[in-house]
Image (cartoon, rainbow, N blue to C red; front, top):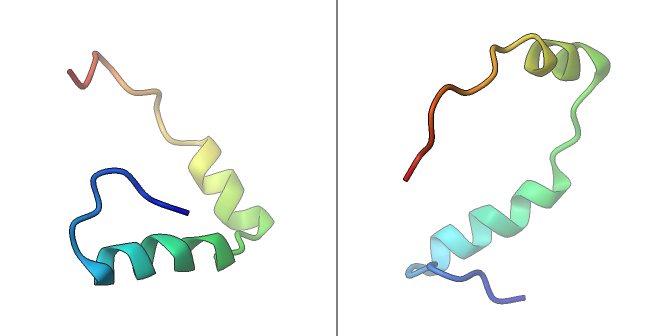
Length: 42
């Protein structure tokens, strides 16, 4: 699957490997406890 904006093979491989990441309940709870983003990126 193409990844728009990817210019290096290493970046494509890293992005594809992210699909294998598994988060446990502690990881998910930590992410849920983060504050909401403020403002816009662009």
